[in-house]
Structures are given as structure tokens and as C-alpha cells.
Amino acid sequence: MSDSGDALDLQELLNKTSGDFPDLPDLPPKKTFYGKLTGEVTAGRSRERQTPYYNFKVRLTDRGKDVTDAEMAVIAAAGFNLGDYPAGVNFYLTPGAMPMFRRFCDSIGLDPNKTFREKLRVDANGVPTQETTEIIRGIDVTCITPEKGNNGRVYVANMDQVGGRNNNS
Image (cartoon, rainbow, N blue to C red; front, side, top):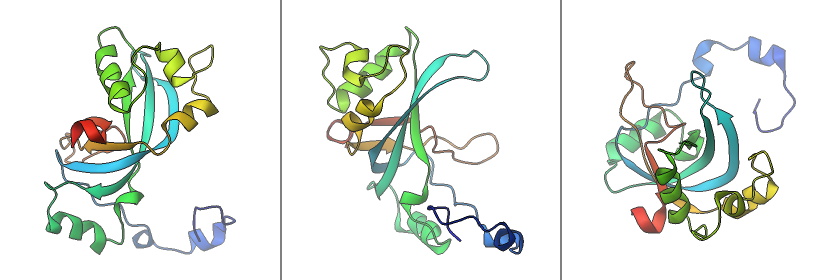
């Protein structure tokens, strides 16, 4: 059974043990990985303050020079590869956070002379569109994994840093 479009077989799933569904090993903290923007951009709001943000999804493709063979072996031994990690980055849309978002947009080659609405081709409500997807899909990026959280895990759904590959490698 696969989650790539095959029909869901509930009985097949229920007849498996927990061990049939291993967790992804954590990526090492504060390390460099390379990837591509998938084109998936979602608009959201933070849970507590309802701060608006955009989340850009990234498909990891390669490790940086600071990632060791041993760190990669842990991932491979568990049966995974970098493309299995649900990576991405959030950019909050507040006056104080806009310089970070501007640097990201500039680093991926979006026109600095256009408004954010124009360069991202979002709709009248600021929601990303199919045009948004087409603009950013496939752009090479460099990602820095975050520190371990309080629970000792490294979460890559919101990377510490993501920027255009030419500007960050």
C-alpha cells in the first residue's frame, strides 16, 4: 500500500504492526541541505496571534559539505532518503518580518522592483494562485536545519533558513 494515489485498503493497514511504520530519523541540526521549491505555497495564520504567513515547501535533494557520511547513513539505514522529508519554511507577514521575506524573494530571483503581490502573483486576498506555483516551482534553494527542540527533535517543516542556492552556498 502506498500513499501515492493507490486505493486505500483499510484492512491492510489495520493488519500491520506499529513497527511497519517507522519514523523518519531526524536530520542533523544546524546543517546545510540543498533542494528545490516544489511550487506549493500556502497562506496561513499562526495559532496564537493569528499572524499571517506564507509557507514554501521544499523537496530536499542533496546534503551540504557539513553533513557527514555517518549522518546520511542513519537516514539510509532506516529506509529513507532526503526527498522523504516534509521540508519547508514559513515567512511571517508583519512589518518587522518583511525584511527577511524580502531577502528570500530577492535570493530566489523575484523582481525587487515589483510589489510582493505582483512578484508572487497572489489573488486579491493574498492567497497564492496557480501562477504563484509556476513562478517558484523548481527554484534551487539552500536550507539550514533548525536546532533541536525541547523534545530533542529537529523539525524541518519550518527550516531556520532557506534562500536561493546561488546566494547561500
